[in-house]
Length: 152
Image 1 (spheres, rainbow, N blue to C red):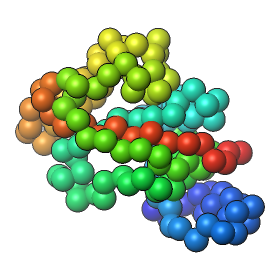
Image 2 (cartoon, rainbow, N blue to C red):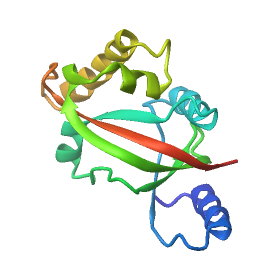
Image 3 (cartoon, one colour):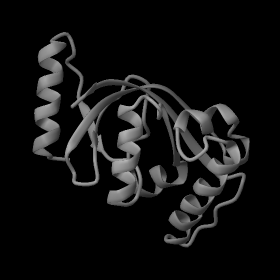
């Protein structure tokens, strides 16, 4: 993604860390501007240190699967760069096997597994329904943990 604010934030970050020569991805959390803003605020507040995505979508869209060490510039709902994170762990599991630690680390709602399952089941079901696929508790999800490295 060619995003001027992401390029500027990345340049400021590597100016402070000239040893970093890696590339970076640019993206936002959530599916709406409102959720992107809310989730980015949780990252900056150090409350959100993980995310979960629908693993099937990587295969359907040919998007690269996140890997440990990946740098990402996070955008808010206005497509402005607000943070840089680095992926620290990646795991693929059936949805029904995701545990309380992941729910808590995602920092959303009351941080319980019940809240996490309710929200994510709806999102993932809708995502797969859009491509005529069915989501179940056995559907694979990608768990990603990350560290906040830089923010405005």
